[in-house]
Image (cartoon, rainbow, N blue to C red; front, side, top):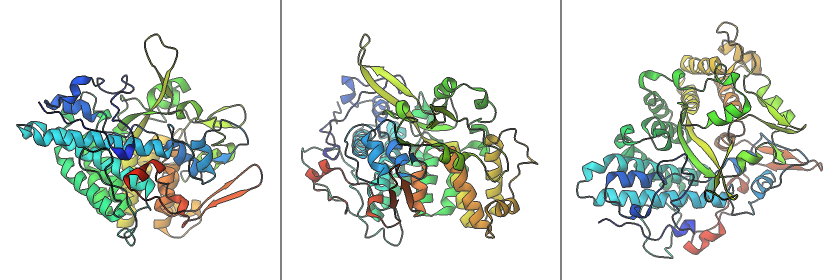
Length: 484
């Protein structure tokens, strides 16, 4: 009997939690999971190897997508990031909760790997090993993205990283060192490249809840985009879909989605039935409840700036709804309330979050091709995206060309215009999903927020607060805090 459950990661300061929103993931684990003596049991364990924490609230609040609306729901995970302050909360939707969720996921991946490597016939566990390696790489990737300086080849060898944990813990207070961002990226790449060939979609009952092949390739495109290895971005993007069927796997916003009510969109957007959702994860979160009602969120001026016009000359089809006069939202992510028991009136709110989508693969490929000088390929991807997002789309009327781009933005550089188009399309596509923060980090763009009291809050490109603070609880493991 293989019994590999030891104490969960001290870094996460929590016991490895194996419960959750069982409606949306595979069968809930039970006590027999401690006996990881079959590939099926390891696969079940790997359902928990994904960070069950939501980063959207604090990412969106730090970005340039939001305003101080003067009134609304006040939560520290929304309020503090808007003011560019360290979040004074350890609850769901906070950076510390996300840190814990990542290391809890890593603990599950490491236990799965130990089971795979100790099996009598390791050949039967290759698919599980592949998923565990890629899942471990992903959780560390997200941690280093938030809690370390953003990857810069010129400084990565000196910038402090995060602990890269590769073994289950067997002691209560194990010390850890951060090493460097470069080291963390090396370890991520090692796990990713080792795991990718082993992924087997046939191993999953619901592939969208695991690192299936398309999701793993999508992760590779993001990793190499952040690392600025653009040729590899294109290579992995082209592997993500058989026969390059990107179009058939995109969200049908200007067809099927455009006829839906808000309730129907909420039920559909983050559903495993949608082929655009390459990887989904359940997260304990209040975001679905308060997305429009947070005090610091999307207002009319930002909605207009982001969604009102674009290079095609047409109108984005994304539907905007509002509560009252200031709470704007696109019906995407909603709350699933899970009762604590069958007859209970209390429980926990969850939000299903798409971690990777078809559209990201397209955007990553387009951006990489800009730097590779493949302008025709970039335009092809941009026009494909527009064909799914512009109301009453016409290939002749709304065609994107280098000339239309230069005229729209008033610039002469084709590359700059193509990049601006990609960034603007991404900003519109992922509005209220938090990913805008990654682009602001990658391109070192300053962010300015204005309060209703006339204050101007600026997060400069070299501001130390762009790196999230290491949770104070991690000090017990000897992990140094980020400078402030």
